Image 1 (cartoon, rainbow, N blue to C red):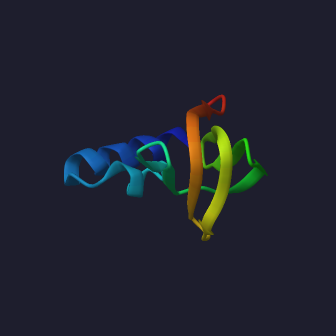
Image 2 (cartoon, helix red, strand yellow):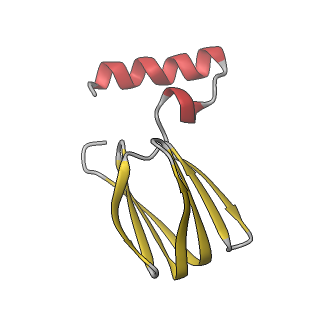
Length: 96
């Protein structure tokens, strides 16, 4: 995405008071008590095991760590993970 397009989208979000996760294609995470994680705006599962989940995002990678992890639901842009969630890391790609 060009620098101009990113600036225009940010200006649109600010000027129209829109949710930035929708316009800027940012991930939205909802963690419920360390037992359930709802992730919106992902681009696909890169790796999954009972101890970790790696999701591709539009501008990086999301890494979820824990034990007994299970993907309860997976949709084109949403994932629901359950288990004992001990850590969440966001790794932004360079140049984003």
